[in-house]
Image 1 (spheres, rainbow, N blue to C red):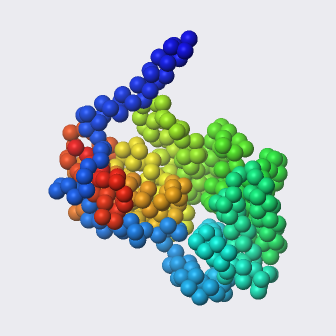
Image 2 (image 1 turned 90 degrees about the vertical axis):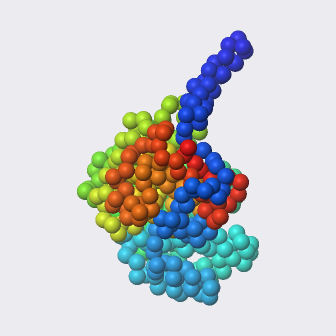
Image 3 (image 1 turned 135 degrees about the vertical axis):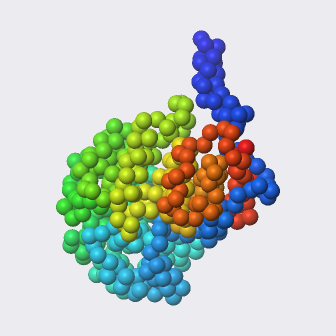
Length: 405
């Protein structure tokens, strides 16, 4: 019987590995040595060097960057308070800025234990009735719980209980602001709210901001299989939100995030990223980004995830279009789940360049996003040779470079 199980295991491994080996022999993306003479450097497209990629936000927000620099340089919280006070409650930007301030304080504390993030402590102590300070404090506690403790431990629960308390304070200080309730969605996931309690919390958000993309992304986590729902629950939630989304809403991309949350560790289906489910989710997200307003603050979030999927599906031209639109900022899924978001993004950027050039693309035709759609969707063996340099500031370490022979 054990021998039978061994044969089954060998067969399964063969089914997964054999196509990959055949592809490696007939052509495909592979590593090559840095400095190859025919290397096509992504920097030739004007892309940002890896060490200069901004990991704080998914896209540009110059006002936020300027204020963050002032706050961290002077340790004075007042500029942050003024920025949040002038940020509309009903939009996505306030949520992103609250996250950014909280993340900056959390990172400071990690780098300088006991001393970092002093400006946030001063903010809360000197202006306890400031709604922005309360919102940032609540988000800071949530991030600390997830980053510094283990889910299910007493320490984790204690921090999240405090975060829930501060969420309540922030909500009272800013009636109509959905951000404190959106922050509490992460608390609900960590503390294991019942579906009924979660629905009550969700209703408060929907009453205030029914089309809030960030809120839907936060709620989606709760319904995922690894937390308090299932693959079917997450798909149902995402599909329902996409179906009722108005024209121009990025909620049409939500099913792609549901697919991301349930990606298998090992794809047992050949061409998994070309399957109907994944292709349909990608096409929905592409429709969403093409119909959304160019200044939609959540647009970069969707483009970053699309880049990941389009590269894996070998839809090189569409992948390059996303790179052109988001390059310079990597503070978004899927890169932020990596220990080195900039390096992870740089690998996918280089793969996009390799596939694009294998279909005849070049810096001359790829400098503008609009012209990238003319390229082929997929690379096939026998394409143009294109080596992509990943060293010298694009990707540190022994990865070498990616190549398409």
